[in-house]
Length: 255
Ligand SMILES: C[S@@+](CC[C@H](N)C(=O)[O-])C[C@H]1O[C@@H](n2cnc3c(N)ncnc32)[C@H](O)[C@@H]1O
Image (cartoon, rainbow, N blue to C red; front, side, top):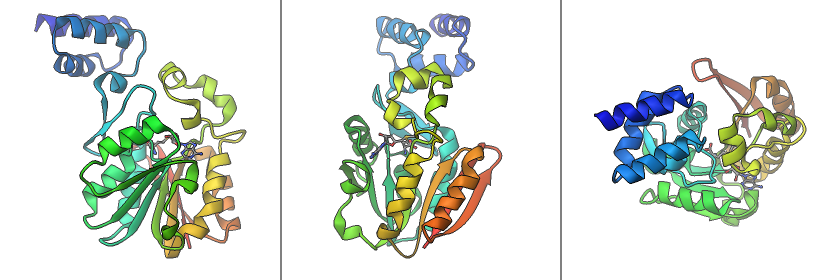
């Protein structure tokens, strides 16, 4: 108990907003006092809590996150739920730019019988996704964008979900240091207007989607109009879904 209170005090002094919750998790994760002191020290230095714990909570699940991998954001639970709503038993679902596999994990847990594929270019992310998705039957591929996917899926994907990087390059430097210093730039930077990777996604989607298939992705509220225009230009039918509580916006393109 004394240990817990000291940790709370230390974290609070360092500016941690959720000091009590973080202290509880760090105390539970540490094997002994020395390990706890080291964890607290690194947290005070600004290392993301999830990288210290080795997992992040997402959609009620634990997602494996090693140091250097993008930490799934709670906001993205809305994108995962949107994908779940479109999938049925037997659907082919692809989580492109899967990171640690958070979206795919929610789909696997929520829709029994889906055929699930996930892919990312970052080997650390792929290793985490394989751990996260172990036992689900999901196939996790490593490689650049859709080149990582099995060609046999061409024209047969029902749900192509992707939380791609969408922060405008200039805005990356204004992100919290936990993101800037501890997550790869390739996981954050979406180019000049933030939509470079979204455009790439929309560009390849028609080739992968089957009849009635959907591509869906998250954007910032200021990017919705431009993203919808891109979806229309690709010959897909756009729809926008928002969740005020999570401050999340999802664009869906239907084939
Ligand atoms: C914003 S993170 C999202 C990760 C995960 N979908 C999530 O929501 O937690 C973007 C991911 O895109 C991946 N990525 C960036 N460029 C890529 C590319 N050319 N091919 C495959 N993955 C890429 C990054 O490695 C990173 O894991």
